[in-house]
Length: 356
Image 1: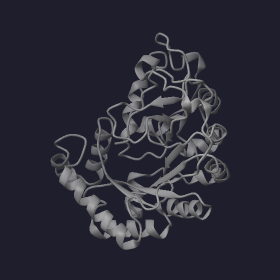
Image 2 (image 1 turned 90 degrees about the horizontal axis):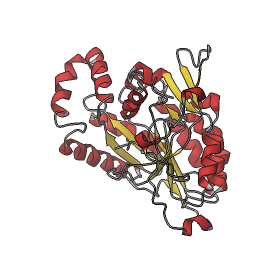
Image 3 (image 1 turned 120 degrees about the horizontal axis):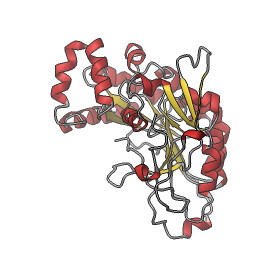
């Protein structure tokens, strides 16, 4: 495993610290590997590391509406067969298939490190997105409890943030989210690409069910935390039938979500190979159709993406929600932090893969 070879030069530099030469993000001596023989974690290996930076910069070419992310984990036990982040495991010489699902890197010092970086004079108080690489509320979070400390640090610095998740464990931190929303902008988005139980069991085997996620949305909205839905992925030929789209949007509307935004499946290197192998095993008759649809690269043809977007927006309007709705962030004016008036730091931060 390539702990020593992964350096700040592979990912940029931390925004809150000095810019120096290449330095390992974590050295082999700082890694503790453990397995836990309980039903919840059977078959999963945790690699506990002490990271040297935690705030990552999104590549300039990204289409994402944010510049900074925090990722307390690498790898994800949600085991979604389509997950675009699988490629990141290869940077550590870990397998991007089963290894991504079962070899989980845990940045155990993430809360303390984030608090330190937020307190740096060079940090300007920019929005921080979480859950855009791997899910910060995957099963590992139930053991390591990193997110409470992360949210507390963001709350204490009145730093705006957003969370994208499939994990119902977010409800554990509802009181902290309410506290943070009282002093800064907090955006919560839950990913629900479909409601078909059979499809869910095969493509997202480690996640809470779509029904459980929809119930979590209702709990969040009832508590005053507005919650949008990223309807992702819409899976061609398996989850894109008109009746499937209708049922998903209807269920999203019934949950009290403030918005629904569709995103068609994209297959980047690392994810493409794993998904194609799964497809060949489960739905061999679709392999050639996928080869044609994704012949141009990682994304489905523009005409298809527009067709799905149009259908979902029409259904959303029918059921009383829209692509924007009331907005996915709880917007509460907070006092401006002194650091926010300082000049933006010139140094780039560790690079984060973009969601799109």
